Image (cartoon, rainbow, N blue to C red; front, side, top):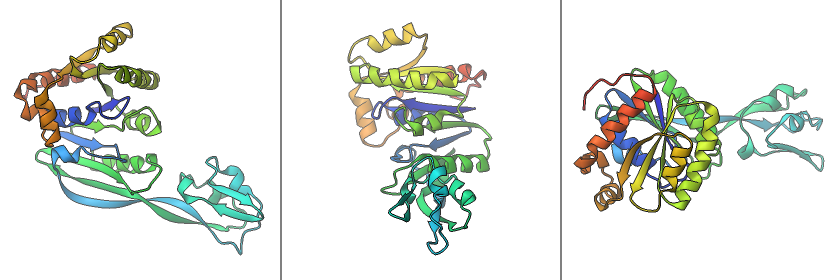
Length: 287
């Protein structure tokens, strides 16, 4: 089963929850799909055994062959090719690598080149298998790299369960990360900003038809608006993590909070149980 840990905004505690769940799970693959700013490895401390540079196929123009017909420009839905003042201009930073321009060019004036997207890293953190992507500095698009991380996931094989630390927000990367999940866990906080972005995430992910549950982090601050929203929309609250200095200190030192704050262990054991029940999988006790 694949479990995606998501949130409407950054800073709600999504990675904190992902790390604690991975540390409790038996036979798990932890995947950091927040490729623009991955940080799950800062808590799980994996030993990387494989690093691959990820590339995207992009077009390169041979001007002597180009007839300036505009076929490549017309087929590109992302405006990565334009015809200006009698010259074809290719903006590879905007290219999504679909290959349409290469297929329609009658003069074969475009040939496949590539540009670096980032890297895909895999390894082991104790008993936890680990996989992550990390974008090249300055790279504007993350979905192509995320697809390559997912391809690597398929090559590794899914022997046990998978916990995905998804990108924050509700844009294309976030939706892409949760698309293949069996269950989505939404992490939020009881504040006005938390509720606003939590609502956006719920509305964005609901059409996917996945079982969803909620983790409320920093419980005890703010008001009850998040709780009211969950009740109104039938969203189960699977766990609450209290607003506690010990939790903040553990996080700031890069510690997994379920290990650093033993009183939270039962909270995460219960969360795991709820996630498995939502996926229709009976839990085998190994806590």
